[in-house]
Amino acid sequence: MSLESITKSRLVPVAVIPSLSSALPLAEALMEAGLPHIEVTLRTDCALEAMRAICKEFPEMTIGAGTILDATVLPELVEMGVTFGVSPGLNPEVIEKAQSLDFQMIPGVITPGEVERGLSMGLKLLKFFPAEAAGGVKMLKALAGPYGHTSVQFVPTGGINAANAQPYLDLKITRAIGGSWFVDQKLVADGDFEQIKTLTRAAIKLATPN
Ligand SMILES: O=C(O)C(=O)C[C@H](O)[C@H](O)COP(=O)(O)O
Image (cartoon, rainbow, N blue to C red; front, side, top):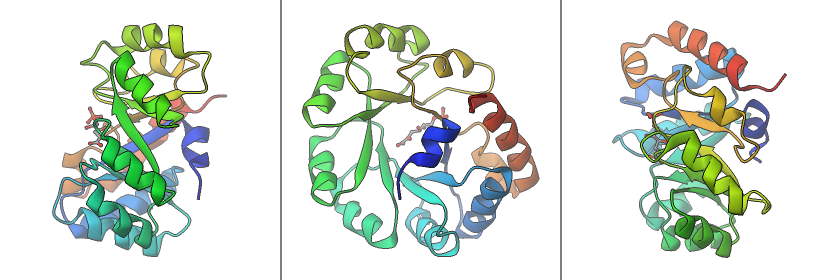
């Protein structure tokens, strides 16, 4: 499976799943709202099981794993049908292992040095993280100067919400934006999937090009 639905919607939902019982209702809410993909962060004990359940019940969804901090988890992700991985930083060991498994990683970068490290490893899609704290749209625009003519694109993530998303989306170098504001951890924990659907529909409206 490709990243087609991410490229089309320009939106990556970054979810923290507190308990296994929330996994399928969350995936269903995203599907019903019109977003057939999810990034599940590896920050909770049930994250792997949650991804396995979503892969099984929603084979039409594109599933990604977030917060990949070491390479050892990668074979299991591939085996269960996860399509892409996201990490807060660029860890060459993780990238090399992912490449050997033909698994797409979207590592986090901020600085020109990190961008070039990614380029030298053949990566075309990088996460700009933590976007707001690291200079936001201004920083990303500055990076678009020397790197805009290459084929690299970014997924700005970190501190992005409905109020500040638009200027990121307006940049050609932005493939998609990532965020948790419409799949908020508290809403997931409270089981408020109706509100998640409402926020997701609004986020899709904001991000999807006309
Ligand atoms: O751990 C990862 O691999 C991540 O993907 C980090 C997340 O992108 C951000 O934690 C989301 O940031 P917020 O939208 O501000 O909640």
